[in-house]
Length: 327
Length: 296
Image 1 (cartoon, rainbow over the protein chains, first blue to last red):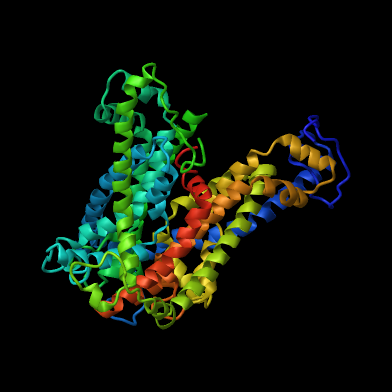
Image 2 (cartoon, each protein chain N blue to C red; image 1 turned 30 degrees about the horizontal axis):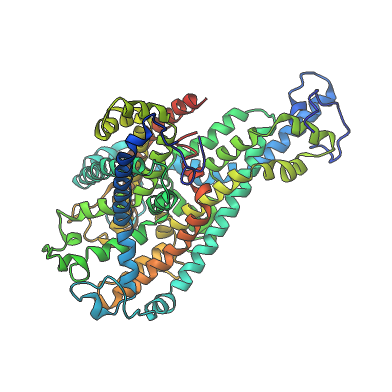
């Protein structure tokens, strides 16, 4: 089959129209045969992308654009009254409200708690698992295992671990009062712990993949030159891996910005504000579902979108760089 | 970039000139490595282990101090309590149906669109492909507000349609499969064309079988995403109505009483087991999809 390298001859269309290979379409030429074939190919292409495009239109682009319209309407505080047009007047009060700024600060705190620790832990595990040793496959599966854990499973697991009556904490004599998940100081770190544990698997996988793309000779040469493990880690591994670490940093930041499940399950909407755990996305959901205020929710979600957009663009830039390295 | 990150032996052992002199040091290093690895593994597995043990304890044992490290008298009835009384059976069924619809739907829409982008020439091809990629930048946190109105007006609130249809297409899947299709040699296309293959025959007999690794990676990735998603099932079913997924069900199951803790832990184990199996069988595909963006 591989012997056929010449341009495809024009063959009769066995399937009535869609028989042209991709090569034929690139043939230049103004003959009516080519033109009608090209038209048929375009038609087929549009039919093939139609299902995906319709879904994107209805469930991605339309809601994205409608968000901007929603921002212009205010829901009256009295239930039952329809939202009315207020133009841009709702935007400033919403993003300067204490509730919003506090939720933004809370989210940033969560990011600061989650990102450095999950990066360091993931990198540490990856370095440890990078050697060729017997049984390493088992360790690697264990280290990456939390990648399949869901936020609900992680919440139930850690909710019990942090329970003041059950298990280890009371035995160890750690009896904070109020318990961690009911304390305005420790509730957010507890949520961070759950988020870190959940993200650790992905952090490990990304770091290990990055480590494997670093030539071993470099680290080996440094070792022969007498550099100790500590020096090699900070002076060789970390700089060589900096694109990977930066990439993992961006995805863990995105991850932390979107985390709210543990708060919904373990803390709940009634206590989220009081316990300083009312992260941005949780605030948006509650503004929409409890206060029924779609306009304010749309404004806040646009802020979240802009933050995530900057992060995603950063991520894509990094990817392009990495891909061009690989080529 | 190797796709089997978790399995392949990677670093080639050094072959120093003075191998004999270095041997004791190397052995020490090996012991050190194993210690470090085992400590890491224990820290990660500890929460899971405690969960499994606690799910098998009676309420008395649960508050006993020191806490038992092994279930001497396993209480399996907590699992049947979670499965039947706690309605985990219903939640698992809902999640399974929703996940199946999403995985199959994403595979079909992605194969069709990716085929067009990889093999066909048509006006606005680049623009349309850019639009597909642009969907990756519109997060659910933005779209869910309007999507809730949309599924409500379609009478899809709290239905399988409402749970799954918004997720039947994925920009990531189209991107991944287009990449895979582009790897297929042109010669093969031309030969297939000579054999009288039309586009659909070529897609189903040649392109799709050759792109199997990427299809598997996409399937595992969508399975994981669909099974574990939390935000949309929470808002699109109201959270308290019968059509709950496993994740939302776990929230209902979570008790504050000591006596109900083993049942909710049993529920968590039930929710986690399918994914552990997934990881063990498809770890290669999973890593491939997770690092598809990260490392080429």
